[in-house]
Length: 308
Image (tube, rainbow, N blue to C red):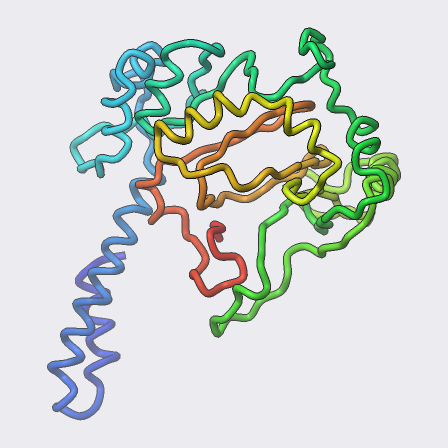
């Protein structure tokens, strides 16, 4: 709570004993205190709330006219006398497909919502249908009896984990269970679980019924999707990744979650093009500069890249 008290407390812990340890203990004390002060500074910053209207960079109009300046402001570590209300929650800018603003945002490495995207066709072969063809039945017809990866969680949270990544000296209990079942079995489980009513109460606790399910399947090895892949707008996508140095697209993932399924805060190792084909998904994004306040698991933990 107080730097002086902390220094005296840590010093007494390290200096209790032989005199020859005092010099190294004092140096250790300074290192610990610097780490504590650094942590407290970011923690206090994350907890503060500023008047949004007092900052000129909060309007969508400003962001669209000055994407590079907005990006620079997100990367600037704020001082105590600087308003940084751009860190308050606000909607990500929405830009229509074909707008020149799209390239400006991508060049500035800013997130953007593309309205009316032509990346993946929603309807039939002509793409003119307003109704999405991406129904459970459509996916079921393509995958048939093939097994897909499904996770089950006792709560609404689906934290990603990788057991072979866990090489550190930490106690670890898998937050979800992983199983391989057919898409038909998955849909049947979803239907049965949904009939049981809400699995989670207002405090996020399980209410005694089956857990939530979340399908996460890589489509790269599914030849059943070859005709679907061929219909995607690869010319546009490849132009984007080449122009902005994203690297060759190497991963296509199908995600299907039940209502209420929540993925905790995390960071990905690649750029993302997320196409919402059906239903709703709410996404929260933080600037990369906020990583110290996100409390990520250690890199040798099974939940690496995930916020604690």
